[in-house]
Amino acid sequence: MKSLRQVATMCAFIGALGGGASAVAAVSETPDGGKEATKDIVLKGDAKCTRCHDESDNPKLLAIGKTRHGTIADSRGPTCTSCHGDSEKHLTSPEGGQDRPHPDRYFGKNSITPIEERNTACLTCHEKDSKRSHWMGSTHQSRDVACSSCHQIHTAHDDVRDKRTQPDVCFTCHKEQRTQISKPSHHPIPEGKMGCSDCHNPHGSVGPKLMTRDSVNDTCYTCHMEKRGPFVHTHEPVAEDCSNCHNPHGTTAENLLKARPPFLCHQCHTPHGGQVAQLTGQRQSSALLGGTTSGKSGINYTMARGCLNCHTQVHGTNNPSTTNPTPQFNFR
Image (cartoon, rainbow, N blue to C red; front, top):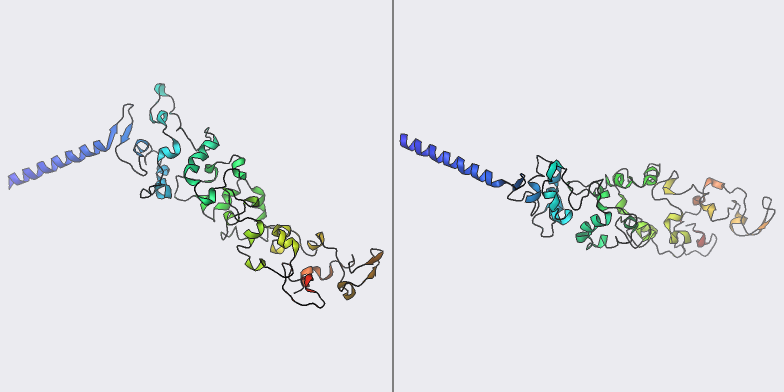
């Protein structure tokens, strides 16, 4: 029995030595005195980086393993050098106690790497995506906006990809729009039901103002389908551009209108009074204008305090009536 205990003790001692040897093998010394891991931790081929950038150095860097970039099973996944370059000078400790140089491509806030070079590292993979195919020549590209100005890579939660936090990223530059969405009439952006990217494609588009569709109207019709038509009798400004009357980011007038009716309507239409003779187009003298008009007058131009009390179908109508009031007035 005593001999069996001695054998068991020896086996346990040998096992401990084997575990210690494997632990030593897992981390070995490099010629410059640093540590070198023998296996990858997060990304493929990251062993030469994670020998220093481990959890004891900067745990946030390893959070990339929780993102799509860190999906090892995906053969398209990048490596550290795919984005940061080979960075041979960064791998070795400089002599004389000098600071270690940054990687070949550095994406920090104070990076000296040219923005075009930083963006090229991203576009090598992402330019193949149809949503980013119009990046070259877009507003953000021509104004030297870097991908890393908006996106965070080494984090499981990229603020700009979450519609609840996305506006705050955009408002870093677009401060006027921050003020507009705080006005009484606004799209539900502060409530987290919409994001800037629901209407805009920040990576470029063929439409104006980086719209996700080919025009402002087509973008609006994505949600407001009932305004699309086609109508028998159209309202030309509506068919031309919704932003002729609306400010989509927010206003103090209801329904995102740029001004309250009737003053918004009077920017194009000559005001008229509320008499039947004027509405039917009969000629009538006007004491205000000092002459005759064809139903148009400056008298009582705030009659009923809104054109929409009568002209209810301002976006267009299919009314087939040929009697007064005629359908082209968009009464119903």
